[in-house]
Image 1 (cartoon, rainbow, N blue to C red):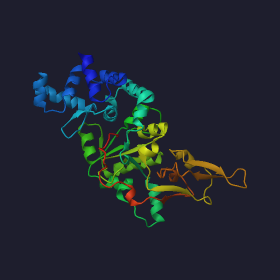
Image 2: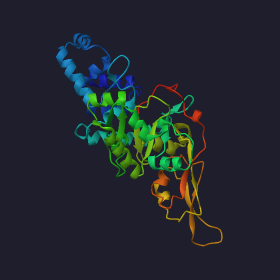
Image 3: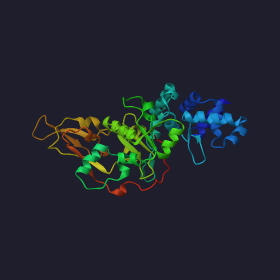
Image 4: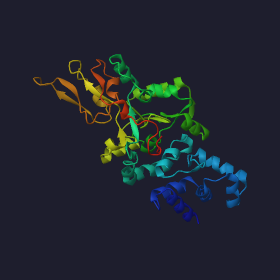
Length: 351
């Protein structure tokens, strides 16, 4: 009977009979909880009658599943995650004491053997990438000092935070699964409705604006890139990622879908060769391999940074540590580049 329950759950999550998902579910929930998950969404009174349990027991079970990241919101109410990626995001972003290291290893093995290919097309929408980079605060500050061009609130990480009514921070599910970098876990920012849901589980800490800006500042200082969903509003989350541990970026780079999956900013980095000292700090900070050090003609040792414009995503990380300010952002895309309103695709889970 228990195997039947778990197999039905994998079918409901669009991964029928996946050995990895079956293993994760068996280690994460009981067969009784599985039967409850198969019936959701539904009112607790109706569930109690159908499953022959007291309504109070049902309510407590749902609260436990929610806390452990095994439920997500839907227009009909709380329900089982719609697919493995959604389950990954909700279950691995919960508090550390509720995250089983053995389960995390199964997630990683699944990602490395099968799931990364599926993930490499997850954020490709019918009209373009579903996620978008936004420049670092410091790079935007440099830009505005030397340009009168308008920077829109939805491409400025500080403004996005300042406009939110509710803010929270949670652990990065990708980084917890990958376990292959030294960057901090608790840098995923949730805003407004998404923050309210994360706090209700609870799987996040509520933040003031200043505290959220401090998370942003730390993330940018450490070389992480900022990304949001590719739309003007509502922006309900902001990730701070690296190419080693971020599922959308890592999978897309692995399978050559980065241009389809991740939208560039409206900017492009450019180098002032006269000011460049060849220190190579920018080279070490670029997540996309867009920077090389090239010998200046007529010299043997003098190196200058060179930007491959095809590989530049305009994140601004190369500017963060450039003491001579030899690198700056150049605005190359119009305001219409960023989709207005909500994208045509429903917002997929990530963060």
